[in-house]
Image (cartoon, rainbow, N blue to C red):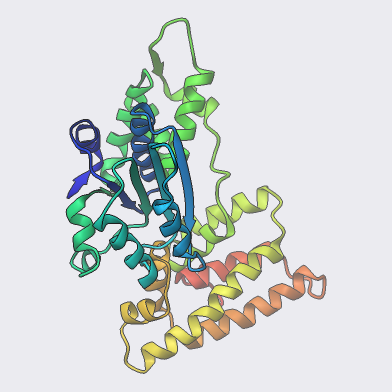
Length: 343
């Protein structure tokens, strides 16, 4: 049975499904839904929990042995399976199906995974599982919904924000739900008064909420691949202010550039961008960035950018008088598709 996250509480109170499967690509909401299941069953007497982190190297015999290992005394236990990919290997499919064919009434399964594709729900192996499971689909908060989501989260913590403060906070966290929740927790702690309710003004946000320091070199590369030159330059400025060694940034850019070349070659041979990403096993959370780049970048440009990267490497090592950060900015602009004076 498929449900939304806001329906989970009701199903936990009414049902006794042997497995709860939480799936989605938004880490905060995924974690909160999984925590809701864990807390519910802990309160129901499932004091023992076994966590299994599942990747390609995981031996599913470990799971099969664990769920069939009956002790002398009956113990209520929650098995917490954390999948790093929504694509389950044949051994995993078989192990899950075998267990659910005769589930132990004293055990519950909590499965957390990235978003499940429609094809998975229609697959032969998953249908029997879905018939017995409660599948909680975690949908991302869309850009036009974000301010409302943020307002609701603030109210939950006893914080009322005026429109200007709310818009400034939304602008600073840029749709990052984890960052937003961290800032809300900080606001509640630092702006706390004797009154349980806090009114958030724009000056309070300006004083208490710092500009993003959560950017990484991978955020920089993905923003450039998406063609967002403004955000890319902002991230580069943040990384520079944090004294990030420029060779680390350059290395991330060149690795991505080289990885694009075989993908572009396949497209030139007639394959579609989606087909190429599927066959090349591009992670779901990077498909938008890589797909955008594949739709507008040519192999000739990639080679030009790699040559530019070689020159930047020389500036970092002191073999050129050019300014490293200026050249990195130019490289990012070119990758994002912006026209520069040299293009």
